[in-house]
Length: 141
Image (cartoon, rainbow, N blue to C red; front, side):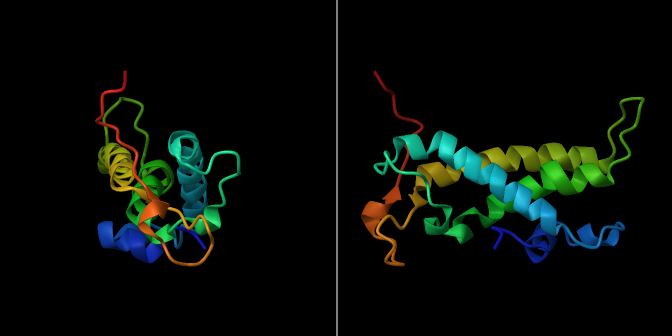
């Protein structure tokens, strides 16, 4: 199951399915893959579970829903709707793409600061010790 659905997209862009594209199912899968790659790159090496491979089924998917929506909109859905004007004038979809790209980065950073939930022992319960916070504002020497 993907981290987001078309229903989630419609919370942020209620008209998204009224522009001639009926669904964004494959785009949700691409956004999930992007997020998992970013988790493996920015969080997993700092997590206490090193030495093993990240098992994405142990992540709390709902923690990433907003992030996935922003990714679908900025990188996959809205680019299909823009006119890509040769004169360089941005249409409303290009403006929204930039907005949601920034929101995606902000949301991912916020998730890292709050702590990624990872069910390390696979008991279907996230313990406090399984919510690893990455301090991005701490000075490292």
